[in-house]
Length: 633
Image (tube, rainbow, N blue to C red):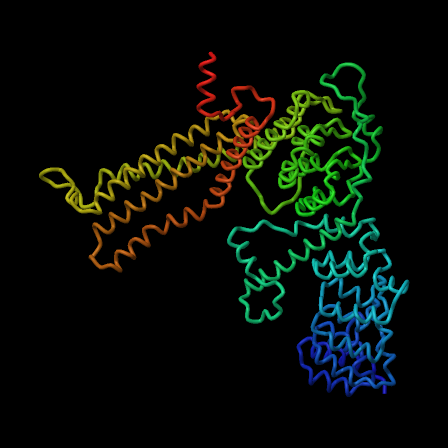
């Protein structure tokens, strides 16, 4: 007997609550008492109770509900909800429902080829969600029952996106590698946006992060093929998963790169832009030049996409397999070196720097807008990033990059004008003028705040020198506790604190009175700030040492636990101070290191160059050769 509208709503509410809360016995009892049983639809999207249990990964309940459906009604198992999903599609959401999927296909084999409104089979759903076990099972069933052209319905959906595309987007690189190996033709298939699998992988955020030495050592001893992870520590299990993903990602990259030759479709290196170093003579307006060049189109080859998104491993692999791909040029006349500079992908620049001979051929690149590599340092593209730096640090990175690129350019390149009639230096100054103002304000505020702290510490340290612990002797005027060992510690600590704080004040004042030229942000300002902060931390630490020594000299009862407590309380502000400034301190240390690295690069470049003056050349000679040359003179 059919249920009334009110009864149907009541039953649906009870079923929904029971299924979502894991009350399996109640679900079975309700289904046994209603006409449709497990095929009742309690949700607003027309999902059956059986589909809902499968969606919630309740494999045992799903099997019990399947047993309630008579064999003569197996055709009813092909019911689809509003989105076209069958109950087999729901199994693709979890690896725990393999047994339920096997029973569904035993009763209704036609479920395997049924698609939803997007043209996706259940196999596609498993690939989208990156579920390895259910994908293996469904893929084996598909290969067993289907061959030839009919396989296309399982491998590609209505918008041309394939299961390889979806597996890459799900970040299950093992699955993507298996699909690419077993269905090689999918490597060259494009989706609705004309993107190949390698292009899609290149557009993904970096999948290979830099690891510390300690993490790399742990990675080496982790067996990523070890299946039983139940007894592993959570952090070790996570690292094993990351290692597994990394290794299969690299295998996938190598497989896709080997089959990709899209870099052969390149633009000519001969430019339609007339190069000039002055603004006289025949010229076109910017609007006319843009009209001449046509619509701007983003690069669409994996090499350039990987460069833009900072996928160093993909770029390295492409250049390793096809070194000639380094000369590939996009529609804007830019190669990977130009795009790496434009998008601030320093790791890609390092890769190109290691290819010294090939770099000579691409470093002279000029795009369709007349920009040299040096122009592009000032024409950076703003990319959102988690590493939010202060404006002074950002300006320093740009200034160091400008100098780095300038070393590779000829004198003529530094004088070239782009289509807007600007040199590279002028472009850099104009585009970074606002950033320089923000950097100046940031640097000044930091120096002011630190100066206030330093002055306060100097005041306290100076006052403490005249109010020594224990007070002076009324007869001699000498400190009463001067023979105590801790009094010497107090004196030394207070003197260091006073001198360090006063020195840091001088340094911070020097920063405040600086001219804040672009050149100053490369090294000098950060060296001063680094030194000033170091001295400030030393002064604070020494003040706490002096404070602790005073407490122990005047309050200590001679018990060890009392002294330990006093030391802990005294040094607590030092710990808080260090943790507060540790991030800024780390960035400053990195800034100094990058500056030093820049100096060393210049020094080695001068030493290694072939056209350096004789005074730069070192030719080892034996002592006999030395004597012979002097005798000839």
